[in-house]
Image (cartoon, rainbow, N blue to C red; front, side, top):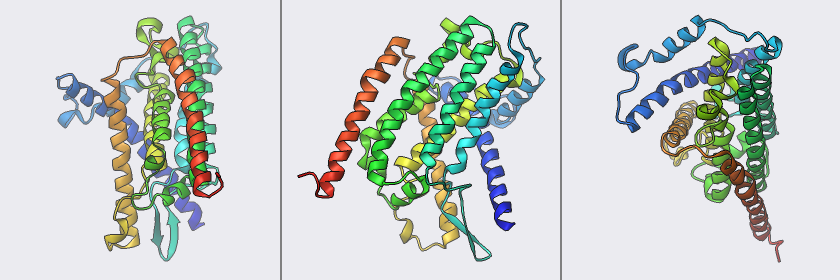
Length: 343
């Protein structure tokens, strides 16, 4: 019973943290954009504009709910629901910290440690494509449908390169469990040093999977008005927008876990702190890494212009996938050489 209560509390905490980070990412995005463009940004709602995400949420709830007459009403509601559900499901296999000892019992700071953690994330993320495609098709709007097709083809194309970059990582770590991959990076043995090309491929694909600039063609307002969510309003539109920020948060957490040690940090064993204190400190440092990558996502958005669609597909199929295949062969050669099986 105690085990179920602890897991339930963890689920609630991860859910609320995901929503909180996503909400304040909208605030941070506008502040960082304002800084890069030499302006102020939101500063009216609360001190320094800190209540702006709450004002945005109230605005979304108070807006009129409109469903187009010719839309498929059931699917029109299902689309944003799938996007939001899949975005919040991915956080369950991420180790947010080491473990806590409570009344002599050890509890990992992770909802569940399945031995196919990476495959689970890929499976859930791929379901998110249906949320976009269903929403664009159900709107009965040609621009929405074109935006949905763009988003689906983009996500499927870049998922291939992302999957191949992970294959090389699995070959070096020998596991699909995210916790085991994090534990192998204890201290400063980060995978980014062993897999620099794999990391570069993964982070570029993460930008494409989150529909972030320069890969935000599904929402290209100059060609498609608003893209696949043109016909959406109120909280259904809010679900689509919110899911993208949650995906960015989860992507930053996965990058930090797979390539930058997760909750591990250098000299962790030399501090002389208790196990629980080290776990709390590791969790704080893990979130520091996550916030850095969220900032990096935003920095790129306001620095690099949007690709054309043919450029995006050229990059995905003719550069990213061949590089990922090369990385697999290179990693295989290094692994065999280390094991003395190459010659």
